[in-house]
Length: 353
Ligand code: IPM
Ligand code: MN
Image (cartoon, rainbow, N blue to C red; front, side, top):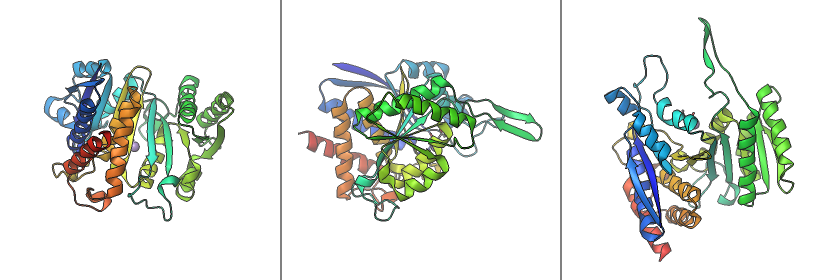
């Protein structure tokens, strides 16, 4: 029997509402699989914590995250909660976990589920099914920034060989594991030196994977190709900032932010978080879609080495979306957040029996 320690950070805004549904799903996994057990450790962190206590996360709690087998995070950030130095609230939690735990992969599956409407006319679920592999520790996020003069500010775009190699290798390994035929390198190497370097390393590492097709796209061009021919893409690897931007576009293709899950993965830690933010205007209304948070549970089960449990979660989500009886406002329904969670749990039990 495996006992996993999961650090749970519900966070701000609608974070707690969606994480609650994700926890229902994980408790159902625990119930249905004899060999899986969870210990959930709830951690108070975020903008509300900063407002109340003056820190975003207590250092002991940060260490609990490091020690846990996985971290499950809702969302961080509230309007009007800023720091005196102007830095965003969230950097001590979300970005600090990514950086200090060296979670260098940000995996963002882009998948249109049956029964969900994509804004792309004529595209079907089989046309929209790819992965964005976003580098998560370098680039414009490296933190080399500042007001260099009173009238000049800059952020330095950093690419290292180690950073590029490990994310590119992850992308090719993912393609291999998932039986995908193509990996696309998304960059701006026609202009930027850091991107030319990234592309060079992509070509070099690509040689280790002769069976996988190497594909190249500039980041500006890829935004139009995502819209015109999403079916072309299997795995797209990008540096941090470009990966951030194209993943919101990807989320739109799959029917909205309420469905987009992500996994932040390193060599010894991992954190799972819906791509959407804290959506403060919806807080407490139980309106928002918990599917993104629930699909994070699927990614967590895959990461922990229980792909069958991961499949069960995804199959239950797929069925509930396909049936279309229980769906939140973003998908054209009026179900409550917890009704979606309950329907997915019931479907898991049905599919498992
Ligand atoms: C994301 C978010 C974060 C990022 C913000 C909230 C710091 O946009 O996870 O995509 O830029 O990475
Ligand atoms: Mn983003």
